[in-house]
Length: 498
Image (cartoon, rainbow, N blue to C red; front, side, top):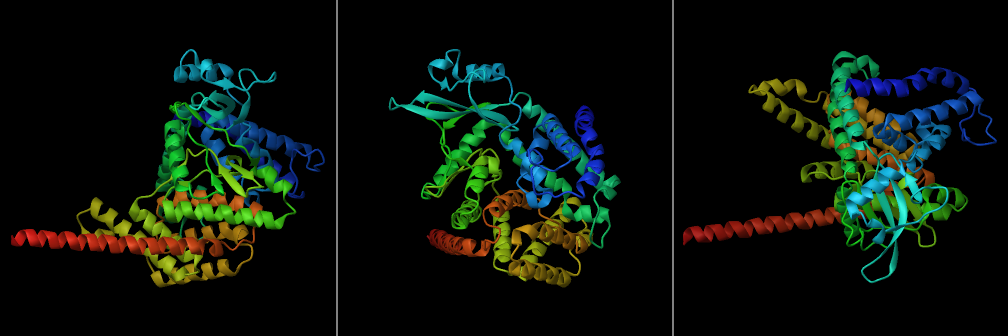
């Protein structure tokens, strides 16, 4: 861990030390143009600093790159220049050598792999044409002869070298920081609430957040998991012509380092938004498709694509269809956590802030009391872990939800709402559920996508029909379970009488 900390200090330290100078120079300039633009009026130093930042992030490894990938989808939070530069991390990370790719293909398909798989080639790239290179691996385009004897285009994903070791080391560093900062250096995380930084961190639950983030990121380190995820997504959305996922190629079983899937045609999301920027109806329609898809993942399937940044989205404008790529990171909850999250989210969407607050209070008190009972035989030891002044907390959340529901710039203010919820949680001792972290990250990325298409979209109008269907199905399922239980009880009583 110490070696990794020293390495990250060397890669990110210089660019962070230069940030105050960058901030000073950028204070008098507009943040509406890309620093890479030929017509940009941004000072030369600022252009250089952003390029230096990009270089530092790439050499810091996959975990830092993943965080910056997500950040690059939020120009409202981090500025247009930052997002323009960090957007390269979606699919233009410095690729690994052809020798590494060839070695993995030989291990996966055998020494004569070229008899089974043909890679597209050109003069500028050795070995094969690279469609994109991300933080975990890179993708080539090729072709195979399928079971029907026809030539079929495919995409070949190959894991970068040493990725697993780097990610595991980074996660150990994050775990260490989540223990050290709250206990010894809480002042590093300023609190805007009435509580101290130490108390604020206690209730925001950084340890749980790090663990949830670790679970999400580690799922990307084995392409066999992604193959299983793609199969489930295709089953879940088989009835929806507006949503598509790559499919696994029969006869080419995925390994931990290589994945061969169908090649999907489509326009990159960023190019689609730029090309159709004056067609508000088209953008609004696609925004509705995106929100409906995310709601179905959340409510209907409990299986959420957690990495839907713009680099993983293709658009077919003529068919009004999205293609979602890179399904390595997914979020799936236990039935109990899913039920809690869905009820809270439903309350927020329906502007029932008091109900959402009551649900969060109940969830926090239940988990904190359970933790107290497990750690001590003294029942009263959990009294300090119960939320305080619950009515005030409920009023705060209800007021915030009312403001959000009537605000036209919902997505632009969402970060303020989340910060408000965190502050209220710390003030009233409401422990944030760590499973909300993975869902929150997925939502944050989706906000950037939705905002690019239609910032004024009324989320509740799109989500309500899906919520109603979900609630109806849950009600029917509960009736079935109750009926089954009663029948089983009657059978047991009948056998007992015999």
